[in-house]
Length: 628
Image (cartoon, rainbow, N blue to C red; front, top):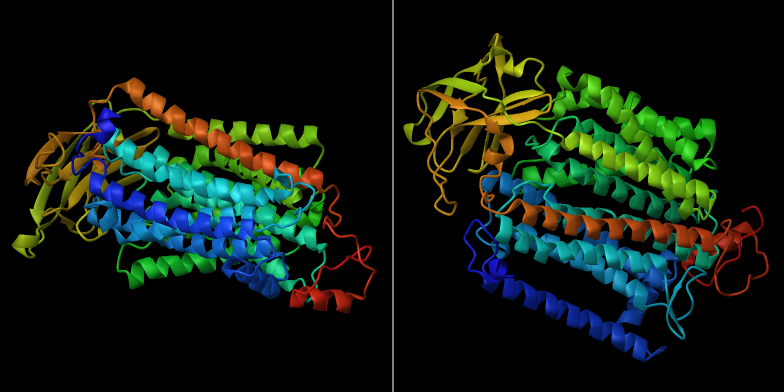
């Protein structure tokens, strides 16, 4: 705590006045939210702003207000947070660290978006005035809340908790400018997995109204679109873990990239195929491309920052659709395994071509042997989890023993794959001799070209990447060096070596990720961060790559403190994941075989047209005809 409250250095946590301002803003927002909720709960049946909003949402959507309004608020909030996240990453790459958290415009979008997600969960807890289905959780004698609302609020709260923990983390350990920092994972991981809570809330709302969704009709078109939107959002959320690869500055082994793509595709696309039915996986992939494409356009072309690339997912979607046609969606685990393996093989081949065409760092032959092994495993693992999620949203989970065994096996596999990918080695005496010459441009904005000679000469044989990467002065450049001889490489484009630019030679070969600084500016905020000049000729040793990309990290912190901090975040994450699994199982088991679960008794059977018309207009509850 002494470290936390100490006056922060510019490369550490936020200034305390900005912490106080942010805390005050959050306090005011929370007070307004709680006053509205308490007023609603204190005066049941009395007209008010919250009740009018819920009634309007119910009329428009046909869902009960306690599901419709939170889903609308949550969906819009997630889009705001997503735009803020990618804008924030691009700002850090192009401009470096923030002058302060409130000086970064992207942070406002992230805060507003994540708080909106949290607020949507709170609304789902506050609005029900009758028991919202058999899985509902009892709060007081006559107040029951939907499981999806609890999980949505928990996901939003988990993500928001990442903000103060992130500031504390930076105060203690310095700025770890990597997307995969523990507290960063809380921020975007919690936000992305909110889609599971929202999907459960939608399933509860549909079941409460007695709407069966196995067959698509005119009145159920909006239901299908909502489910596609949620599954597309889940695919987007799972794909945020690939962010460093999307921008071309990964600090982890390249094998993670195809592995993460297969895992995300297996989980989200399988869940979509099981929950939505035929065409669900393909529609989800198209939804992903539309939203992520729009985000890339806004960040790159509207805001003028480095633009993220994105995976294709179309081949994986077709693979899952094919597996669904062959196996049917009533065997979710088998569908997940087969579809996931296809995502990790056929999908891998197609993504290989796509990544080579559009990504800053294409996949190379250096990752072929391990990618062919770990990627199908990752796809099958994601497929199993997606199959269970989709089956749970249909209220048709496999037996408890089968579901529990499959889920535990999948999480163990994810842990093993992660540990494998994180296993790296340090440089062992390799050096780089660099010869540079000015490109003849503006002397005040010096750019250089030249030659790099590696020692030993086989340092980059079968390397995944050999690049000169420049960032942090208004842009980013990734130059894939041209091999001109054994251990000899040439720069293809001039590299900036002036001002605030950081220019580094980077090599990943096998388990070793290492770098040599070509030019780095002095930084008074970082002890010992002196100018590294781009001399005409020099020889420098390779160091661990993260020492250069995470220059702001403190190196005088006890190892046990880092370990304890990581374990705390890991414990919170495990509790969070277990809560999501519990929620899916609770709703699915309580709702049995998917029959309507609305509190009122079934009404006399009406014609399909009558039922669809009432659902489309949002009026009244509808009864499902047998076999609908």
